[in-house]
Length: 98
Image: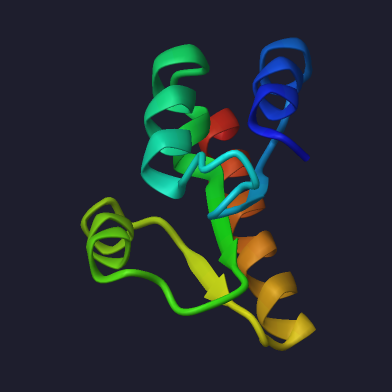
C-alpha cells in the first residue's frame, strides 16, 4: 500500500492497532509514519508496530528504541508477529479500560 493510501485509511477508519511496513514504496519511513499518525490520530502512535524486509538503519533503529516502538525484521516467525500483535491489542484494551 502506498503512503497516501495509508493516510486516507488512517483518517477514515478506526484501528485498535497497526502493523505497518517500515519502508513504504514511496519512501515514507517509520519515523515519518509515527510522526504523521501522532499528529493526525493522537494516541494511535502508541499502538504501532513496524516490519522491515531488510536490516534496519542505525538511525531508524535508534528512533524505534527511543520511542519504545516494537518492530520485526524479516524473516521472522509468525509466532513473534502474533505475540507482538497481542501486546499492541492489550495496550489498546488497557487504554480503553483506564
